[in-house]
Length: 146
Image (tube, rainbow, N blue to C red; front, side, top):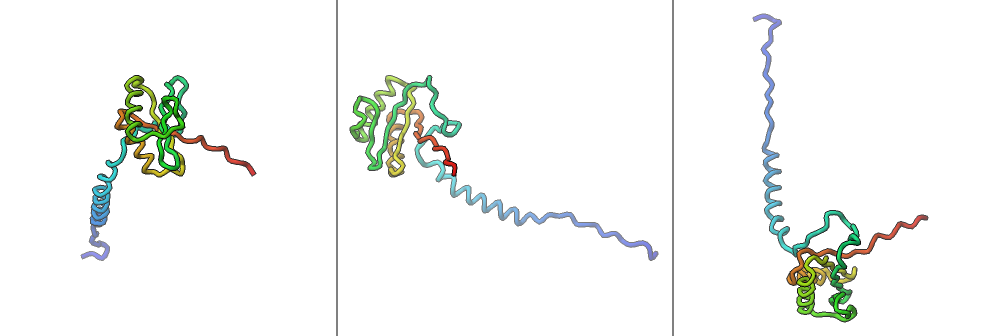
C-alpha cells in the first residue's frame, strides 16, 4: 500500500426521526382531546371584521338586553323597561322574525352580567329562529394624553 492513499470514509447522512414521531403523537393526543370540546356551545355567526358598526341602510336591529341581575329586556312592544321571561323572549322574537325575516338580532349584556345568562339569551334567540346573533359592545374610548 502506498503511504499517500487513504481510504475515504463515507459520511452517514441519516436523521433520527424518533423525537419527531414522539412530538407528533403528543400533538395528536392533544387534538383528540380538545376537538370534542370545541364543538360544544352556542352557534353564533360572527362578523368578518371586529367592531364594525352596522351600516345605516340595514334594518333597525332587535336587541335583547341582559342586565347585571340576569333579567332579560326586549326593545320591542313599547315596554323596553319591563323584564320578560324566557318563554316571552322566544315567543316575541319568533313573531318579529316571521314578520321581518332579515332583521339583525343582537344581544347587549351588562359587563357585570353572568356569562351563563348571556349564553342563555343567545340560546333563546336561536330557539326563536334567529339565523345569526351579534353582540353589542361599547366603542373604545380614546386614550388620554398625559
